[in-house]
Length: 280
Length: 306
Image 1: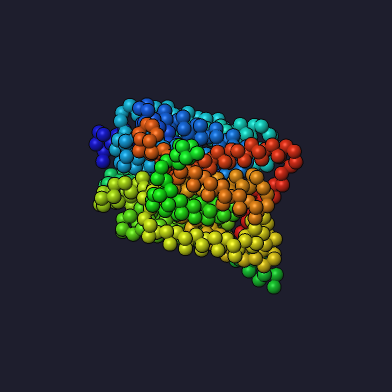
Image 2: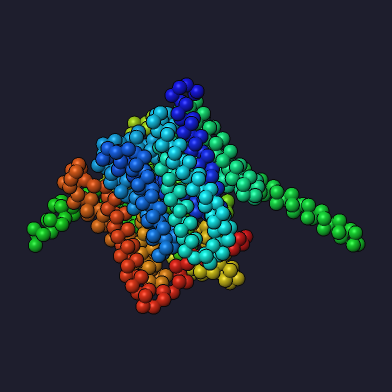
């Protein structure tokens, strides 16, 4: 699995994992899982449209995911955020359905767009992905403090008014970017597992932001590497392994939290018993 | 007159058996989705509704694999997913989206595997498209009784739980204090939403069934804040979108560019979205005249009661 043609795959997948770990950390922190789910799924329509009119898939993905982010931001300001997300998502998917019915590329290509295809990455796809990822990570880091503020204390951020909305839109745009480059590799339906599984576990292990962020990136990389290796060996779709590993990390995080709580509870009980003994 | 009618309705529409079946099954699914959608939107469970749709892909692809009607797979897995989501903590607003997302991700991973097996081991190469985007015109007539039964069950749950659900959607603390079994009501409501989603998965496709669940309900809640009226509006909107969508898809058979018909699901989704935008415009106009009562449109966070 380390042949020449796999080198691009490993490189691109690692870059994507880093971005998913960083961006996903804030997705989990802000509880905006639905948006992070909707943008990739909807952007899939962009890929279908791009292949219909014969332009670069990445362009179609970028246009659709950015349009989706703007649409969610716009509709979400006037109505409920989750409703806006759902409606923008299905509108994009409906368009995707239309494009698919016009084009003749049925079956396998659609499947790989939805569920990922790791073997088809060519040399000239590496550079765009690297550039876009750098933009994503830098943008997230520049927004680090305001993002933390609006995630941890939404009321305070809201009190600052317009700025919060700008941060919101900026973050949506970052998710859109991260989405459009990760989509061809792990697939529309499963980028999202990569974005929430590892960060949710990382958050359970530590509550300090920087270590959690780092841990989230590490776990995301481990997930992607394991998924590609397993997919290479079994020939099963990579999306299955990404999804399963994401759920596994979440379970581990939950178990760790529960265990920590039990331990704390036992410790407290012991303390209070000792206090009672001393007092008695 | 008949010339105009002929222009609007492609000849043969009212005589075609697949169209009849599509109208019946699609209509039933749309009405049930519309009713339960109001609860989903009021309770802030749009995302759960969407996740059911995706998870039902898993069941749909598994049922292709073992060769049974997809409706069993759709309904079974989405109700199962409702149970799992409740178990791992969908009740806390903070972790709710995360739990939903994890269930969805794991379900879709399995779906990827099943679809892969479908296409490699079976001869059902169209399975991916059929499951994801639906196939209203090739429904199996024998599925109709089951669709009706499942709809009655879902609508029945909504009717029985109507008042307790409304109360616990508006204020879970109050409902709890008045002795409403909040958690049981929540689980049953979630299961009913899952059933509604699996019905529309059958007709307009799994990943688009969110449209029929959320779109009409959101439209209705823009137009009125009275829950009973909203449910009626929502069912009517869903039904209108579905039937108009079927009609347009039937008419579109000779439309460019491919002359093999535009997909039904596209029309349904586009109509649902147009309805929402229209309601948005009229709603904001009315809102300027008098402040809209926000109580119903804001979900109440449910306390972690056990």
